[in-house]
Length: 454
Image 1 (cartoon, helix red, strand yellow):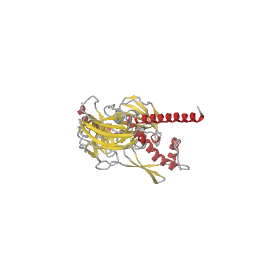
Image 2 (cartoon, rainbow, N blue to C red; image 1 turned 180 degrees about the horizontal axis):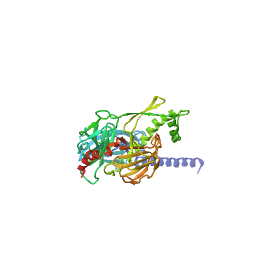
Image 3 (cartoon, rainbow, N blue to C red; image 1 turned 90 degrees about the horizontal axis):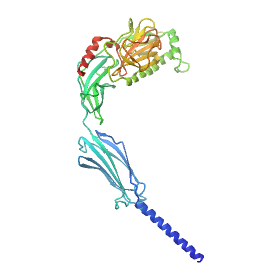
Image 4 (cartoon, rainbow, N blue to C red; image 1 turned 180 degrees about the vertical axis):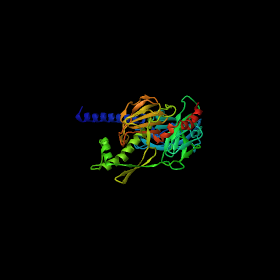
């Protein structure tokens, strides 16, 4: 065979191979078996109001042909969206290979009934499989339409609260409630279900009316269900106003020389004088310490641990009261103002400090201006604070009984002399401890209300 004929045959064979390869590529493209992909973002389990979600579909091979989004409920079909994509270019090379759509489901506008509903998303591609219908992907998502808010109402009566004091409300919610509590303006106090196995839905909620609450606060019960619906309910209450005294504290250079070494691990402004260091401690460190105490509210037990009248440091005199408006004077000039959020009790030096009531230790250690401190949880959001201690005798998570020695008084932190700073918090908010030392107040404001739980 001549050289020219061999070359011609070679070209012919190569042409056939290329043709067959092209044909195979073409047939494989139009008969491909890969299904379109569907991704849906922000789809909820419950629908209570207009709900928006994003749907993304793609097909990298033959391309998108048909998209249909349908909502189905009790045999009723609602067509939310439908789109047909044009075939463009050889085997749809220039067609749509991805598509994104944001959709909303509004129960009211769509006249959806309460209960189950199913979202179905169908996507077909341009493959010639399935008799030319193409590959199909079906995405299904079941949801529950719930636009009815939960019920909440107060059960207890006689809600008389002192400014800076503690209140208790017993309230009832419907069975669909998943979270509830009480608001005093922007302060939220979570309620605690009295009995997990009971169907009565009775909740216990201790709350505080902070010392700085202005007249006519917005106080109401609040409940939320799984769908995000929420209800508010008011109830009768009366807040007794109170004037907190003003106390002047003279800051001497001798006092500064004694207390500043306790704060040697804090970073002060370069070149700051002793009084400026004190002011930084009294303002910034105080705020940091109060935040630590506030955050301990998450460690409370769901059941009541305390019982009966709370104990006061024995043989002690009140040196400073709750809510005192302290004015700090240095060399005859007022340099700062702060609020005292506990009661200072002075007995003899290094006096034994008893647990005011049954509880569990949730904090021990050094706490800035408060010095060596112990905090006890008494359940249902109540906690007691013992500060300026010279010695701590308990450990975290230790259970203590009323009257058990937990430490000794001292003058650690920002204390001018040996004493105990005693405080009580309700869900992290400081309240006046005097109420809890009064058996009549506990009987009239707590125990009588708790009778409805039995």
